[in-house]
Amino acid sequence: MSLAKKLPWVFKYRPRRIDELVNQEEAKRLFIEWLNSWFQGKPGKKAVLLYGPPGSGKNSLVEAAAKERGLELIEMNASDYRRSTDIERIAIVSSRGGSLKSDRGRIIVLDEVDGVSATADLGALESILNLIENTSHPVVLIANDPWDPKLRELRDACMMIEFKRLTKTDVKKVLRSICSSERLECEEEALSYIAEKAEGDLRSAINDLEAVGEGFGKVTLATVKALLRARDRDLNIFDVVRKIMISKYAWQAREASTQTDLAPDELIKWVHENLPRQALDPDDLWRAYEALSRADVYLSRIIRTGNWDLLSYAVDMMTAGVALSIKNEDYKYKWVKYSFPETIRLMVKTREARQVREDLARLIASHLKCSTSTVKSDVIPYLKVIFDNNPEYAAKLALGLNLSESMIRYLSESKGDTIVRQVERFRQEIRKTGTEGKPTSTIPESRPSSKRTEKKEVKSSRGLEDFFKKQL
Image (cartoon, rainbow, N blue to C red; front, side, top):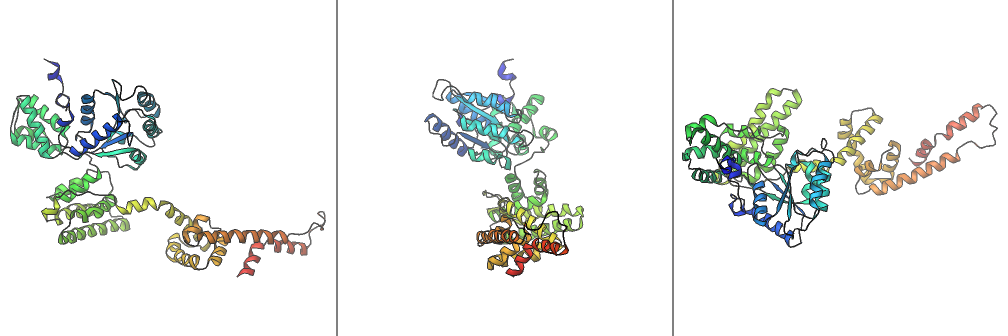
């Protein structure tokens, strides 16, 4: 038996040229342009991040490009080399040496970068960034889901190239070609079934075809139905939302919600944000938002009562309820670009402000002997009015409550600097008043303190109170 026949089909039929890669025309164009910029010595970004669902051709594109141009591939799986020292030893050393214009250039490939943990794999991401900064060869990062917050710096350092999920037609085309090359008898319905179960993952579809073909000598619909089951695969959140929107049946939409790690309260934000982009028919949009509002009611009741039995109703309404509300097929199956929920973006941007608000509420609550929620609803709004309209009185309050500069600026963006300066002037006056009120050195130290002296000392220690009495 020849070596070619022993090879698994996913390797045997892997594209050897870029034009053999199925679909992904835009990704191929962008990658070739980026690689050419290295040959011209003018790379805009030193690294590229290829991202998209499994089996869409990310690795195949890099390998085909390397074969066409005679480049050496330096590959490592970033989820296997967890320590920063491993990445530095293998990747950074490989980044140095000969020029790309020499006889044997290199492409450095780091696969599964989304598998690197920001905590457990301490220093790994920093080492990858260091590699990108100092490399003298093209660096290719590959990920299924690049939108994890830990990868933000990597996204900024790389040119992003998206790979779309392959269609059922694309997958069938490749399977049919393999059957022809292997002289394998295949029913068209069986190929359709394999392509559908693969959900755009060409690698898994080829593996399924090989398993059935090698085991039974031919591929029939009855055989594949008996052997193949739907895969439990995690999708990136954009694919999950799209799958919910275009689901024709309730069970399909519910199943989509199980293919993500997002909690229901996060998933509903994603559906809410992108619903107007998909459901352009006003009637569809109205029905979908009705379903979404009911889901929100159920989630609120869960928080209020702790009755988790209601969760299944909430998930049904935000998935199946939304999917079945979109009836206009002109818009339902139209591809649109989804985006991150603005509420999540705002929460990230306002995290520091919210922390200042929490600290302020706790401080004031300790003075007023009330709850922080009462302070947030009943006290802080009035303080904002005072701080915006009466900076001098606001400075006295800030001094008395010992507010920090960030708290003062939170209460008044427009007058914050003025109030901070006024607080500092008040502090200087208090220090001056306290110094002037101290006992003089004419009183002998050995002399017992008289009641009169004690009263004078008490009076001198109350400089802050005396100061406010003068000012108010």
